[in-house]
Length: 224
Image 1 (cartoon, rainbow, N blue to C red):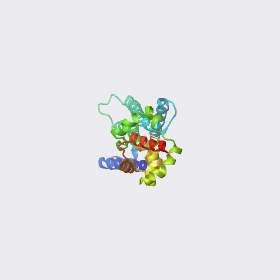
Image 2: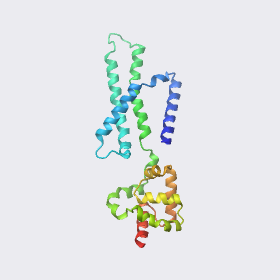
Image 3: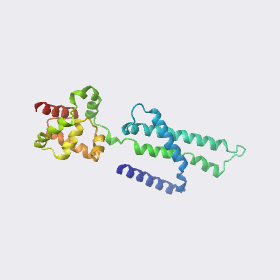
Image 4: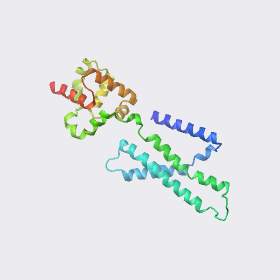
């Protein structure tokens, strides 16, 4: 949530700079009706496109695209309505009419902001080895999944190997087949910190990726 608010503040600040540089009236950017229409349209499209149980992970993938489509649609309708009321007998459109045409694109602006805010950052993308491991998640689920009780029994062994309490928490998440983004959210950490912990974990045991680590922990469980 903190990162989301910072992102939003940066976007608004940059918009204010752009508008100020162009001599545009900043207050004209905000239209409550258009904001509500974009939010409503995005919500309806996301609900319609969703199959099965609604989760935040699914919505993060649906909302950016649906927000963009809603913005395009709303702006197109606004623009059509304004242009249909233009007096065709005049060779030059009035300043007010031109301003109305420009303001029609406010919903698109709102939608793009929503897309930027909610889409997953490139930094959250998994590494190639992580992607390969997770792509076979369903196939290897029964083979590598470790339940909480079994993991708890291995904590003394991991501590003896030099694992810190935080690294043990990260290790537990790795055994639950969670991605870096999921681990960061669950432990309230940045993804950069999560990657650092995972790197330290790999240095303490003879593994190079998530799949190998889960197999390693599973072998400890079986040796019990």
